[in-house]
Length: 333
Image (cartoon, rainbow, N blue to C red; front, side, top):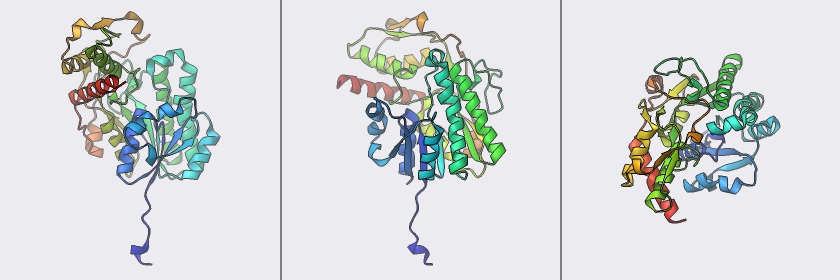
């Protein structure tokens, strides 16, 4: 047969949590690489609103959306059987840490068991696909080692983190038990202009924009001494894709290796807007977590060595972008 007559077959990817921050940026990345992108959407009264991120990135019309739910194994089997993806990215979760104390059972069902359902559906309907699990630096919790890498023991400090630990180890178990190409990215904090308003970085940039535009006078925060490693979602979804291009599956810490306090992050945002931070921040004890993760510091050397991954966007660039987008968003609302 003349090879020139063979039609090019693009890769197919299925993304759970496609309407979230990472799902939207990953969709854009995969589309740019020529993928056929499919996404799982939990049908609800807010479904139209939940497409906002895909719409903002200009890809809403280029992805194929399926109604399904991580808690419904049958719907997952049906969708995976229909799509027959080469790559499956499990990004869906109840992902707001604070809410996990108010909704621990929901968090367990979606974040922990949801991953197991995707793995089992994949084992049944498309066992040769490659699987990515969105693990989290929150799993380290009360850190057992001063610098956290892939071998650092986990000590989760929230129902969300505990659920992520379960999901992480199930991905390892399916890899070792069934020979599946299952990888996990232990991602440290990553943000963007489409981050949910309930997350501290977006709460800060939105608050700064409102103060700058005269729509607010203060920003109420909890523990601003907590230290985090923040990167850009656009960089981190590239790491997800790189993991599934490896011949052998594995687990990888993804981080910038730069740790700063919440206060440091706030200062970048306020200074970019020409405001004095100390005049506007109010510490509210009601916003402290029941159990805090005080300090995280990553060692991402494995990702650099094996994936060739490096972050391209600095913390300052990311926060300034977020402030600018929030200023524009609020001014036009």
